Amino acid sequence: WVCIFYKFYKSIFYNAYNYFFRGSAVAKIIGNNVKTMLKFASTVKMWVFEETINGRKLTDIINNDHENVKYLPGYKLPENVVAVPNLTEAVKDADLLVFVIPHQFIYKICDAITGHLTKQAVGITLIKGIDEGPEGLRLISDVIRAKMGIDISVLMGANIANEVAAEKFCETTIGCKILENGLLFKELLQTPNFRITVVDDADTVEICGALKNIVAVGAGFCDGLRCGDNTKAAVIRLGLMEMIAFAKIFCKGQVSIATFLESCGVADLITTCYGGRNRRVAEAFVKTGKSIEELEQEMLNGQKLQGPQTSAEVYRILQQKGLVEKFPLFTAVYKICYEGKPVQEMIFCLQSHPEHI
Image 1 (tube, rainbow, N blue to C red):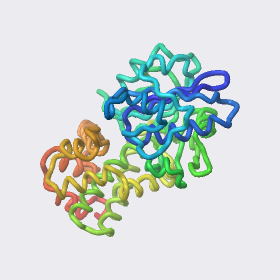
Image 2 (cartoon, helix red, strand yellow):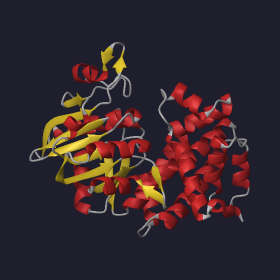
Image 3 (cartoon, rainbow, N blue to C red):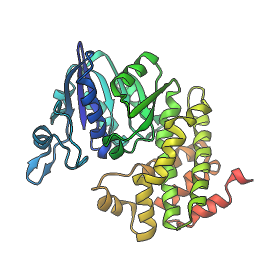
Image 4 (cartoon, helix red, strand yellow):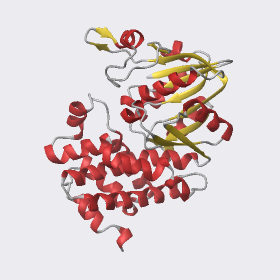
């Protein structure tokens, strides 16, 4: 999905392509916010990857029934959220962009958008993943900056989408490189029940959002093995330690440990390890013996799970740098998902983790 939010004097572009509930949940927030903010015009254009649902186009359902019946059923979207099936039409004259897509599609989307934006365009990404470039790690925000030449902030946090849509209280974190832009997106997105902290440690915020999904897969394995809460707590703690170590090695700038105490860090890690779909599918992986691909088809309508894929990308990056042995939890998740290692390897990983030596 991609949405555009028109400012009073410029336009805003929002991209949330097929990313489960999250895109529509955020569209719901922004659609309601711009109704009462003079800085933004009231119409929200949302690019929709067209699908047919029970004989009707999804764009028609959204525009007439004001509900995304496939990805956010049961929640009404504001009437000022308008679905548009043509990407270039949706992004025309946009100068504020919000990206919420599976990270493997970012190159295709950037290629389609480039050349259709204003010179002053800036963006924010909610994408929880990383890119594996020829020189190792590339953050998704780096990909967007390189492809489109715009400043990108990032938003990550403990924000399970159906709870956000239900307006249950939660926190989130915006990481920015230009404070003015981070604060602008806070103004666009914050509500009384969606509280935002802005920090200048953007790379760490983004890495937290990607790596926590790997840890959640490990937590799901433990649930499938019925290991109990103590074991899951160990997965969360050791996973957090590996996240911090990874950030210190691969972030370009200084890494603040305080960032891991924001919603993007420990809070997002906890909620994902207890309530997220990476955990849920990983538990089913253990209990059913089915492959990740089969479970994606059955449980996620064929959409790709981010945790296993990110573990594969991280594993190759660590291999390239000769650092595999320093990240045993990340490595165990990868090998269980893709190399046929028994799930019990997760317990051995915990028992022999370097943090205990």
